[in-house]
Image 1 (cartoon, one colour):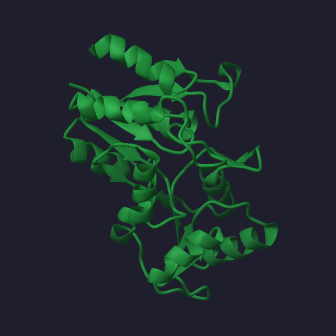
Image 2 (spheres, one colour):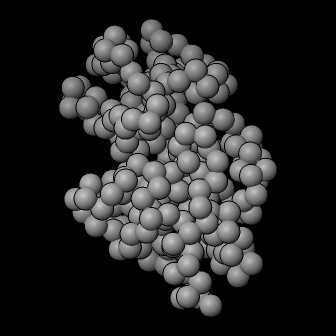
Length: 248
């Protein structure tokens, strides 16, 4: 039996109002009814993990397994830290010791960074702080426009400083491995469904997973694709229809 990794934003809920996308709730119900192992994987860093899980369940999603970067950050982070990101992320990061002058880690969440913020981050990295990205998304949706995601920001900082970085959430192998252990499936027995081809699916496919792209989030048309995944669907509903035919 195959197991499933289900991305959340752009796959199960939309990026604007955070409401269920077509077929998304039904997909989780189908997998649960059929006793098919699956886990919701999200790069959420704006809400406490338990709060976000409860929100998803309040929408009608049925699931037992969930993982986001905040749940494994403690295993990676070295205090004190200099966090950068939106206000909600900075509030969550208050659980750690903060020091912007002499941090051991610079920790980045997603936001539209200013040039001054980039300058501060670069100087701190060049002084010896290690860079951590909460995830490595390819694109960031805001105000119905697409901006460079955190993955693009991390690559830019690597080029600017000559220093590598570590990623907490998707698509790090550590994150995927933890999720695979939760559902008890090896990578070659897992299908990942996501709207992020470059930040989720391609790295997952390189680990041996089957990649399914939905065009309900970051990528709007097949014409935008430079490397094809195994399957492409308009949204979760079309994927569910094929899954029902396959499983019965």
